[in-house]
Length: 106
Image (cartoon, rainbow, N blue to C red):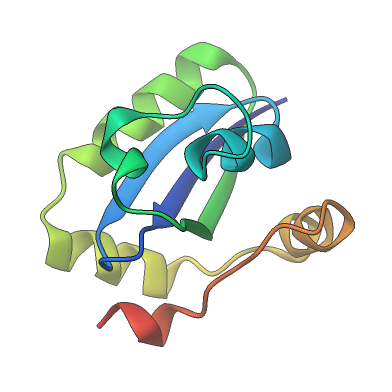
């Protein structure tokens, strides 16, 4: 299973990416293990604000691209109007993934 995720960084900017392992990817972005992105390196800590399932890498990449094309205002509107489903909240809870409430973005 692939996931499209959106992080909020310490400076309240948004970062979108794809992965098959949410917990490991967050650790990479936060510098706990090797990997991550240049963008998040200077904006730690990062926390999840949105997670979406995708059937395969191709679909995940297309969803990521679509999200990245939005303006910041439209990204925040999207995040507000597409709350996490119960199964994704359960995944986040099981994997002990830190989720940030959306009102803190605005």
